[in-house]
Length: 77
Image (cartoon, rainbow, N blue to C red; front, side):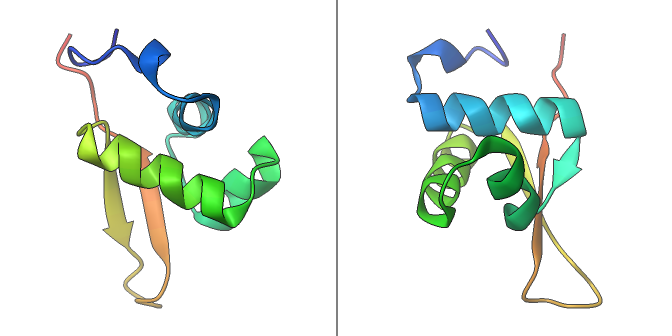
């Protein structure tokens, strides 16, 4: 369990993205796609689910505001 959310209940694509982000700390969509083998659509779905579950943060790149970086929120325990 992570922050009172059981990630085992999420679809496989969401768990893959969450696991990758836990290992990498921060990443963008292109690197997540490459590492997990998921399509852009699947990665974006996973990001949306994880964001709604309050498990990740989204950071905007200051040098290119079109880019987003995703990182796992730090657990309180």
